[in-house]
Image (cartoon, rainbow, N blue to C red; front, side, top):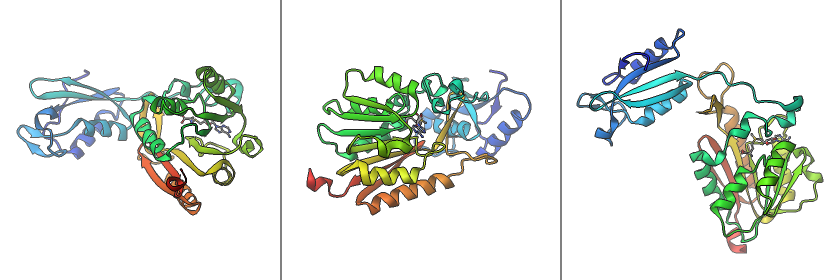
Length: 312
Ligand SMILES: C[S@@+](CC[C@H](N)C(=O)[O-])C[C@H]1O[C@@H](n2cnc3c(N)ncnc32)[C@H](O)[C@@H]1O
């Protein structure tokens, strides 16, 4: 700990933010403060006056660090009923590695993205699990994943539904990510195509009970509207479901920051995300799907055929 820490036990949130802004305005790599241990007063509201100061659940410190673009450190015991909580600068993340200057390898096996296992993100796992439940897949579903990368979503589907025997088709333009996926699913019915998504209409892959497109529709060069139209009209069975994942976060120095970020905005600006989600929702509804919008760091738009319950 760099210093004893600012006594924040009785401070308001605005005072805490002002303190952190000031403490980190120069070269200081981190700032610490002292807070009350929230375990003793669980159930109180954030900032609610209690004996000795104000109650603040750990969630407040996690969110504050995220919103200020800082890394949370601690909490550590700091005397009876007290915790020391640190806020450290994140280092600027290097740009994702682009192998041989090939933009198709931006998310390839040699990129920083390859270190990320989406199955270790609670929101991703819980929200995708719920979306998959809603899809009500038959025992041997045909599943298409666009932007499959190394196959984290497919791995999650297999782990969550061990009774299913899916026939999976994955499309991605990163040859190195597909090589990892090929090894990962060697004993499964998984066919992987190295192709640009613009060429999906030319791939003779048929129709599917589920189409997944997670974190790919907003990629540079992808015409998300045209792709969605093609998927709904040409790639879904009459009872087929779609799950579209729209990132509402970004990683920096290993930390997940909530909300789409725009240049010159300190806090998330969600205008484009909301516009895209609204388009997907409306389009799917117009094509006879019941639509659910869920999620937090990753938003999921799930479209389920209205007639699916009657037809299965
Ligand atoms: C951010 S990653 C998401 C990967 C995975 N769906 C997930 O949720 O972890 C986007 C993926 O889409 C692929 N991709 C982006 N644009 C593409 C395009 N035009 N054609 C094919 N694949 C593309 C990238 O190679 C990458 O694997």
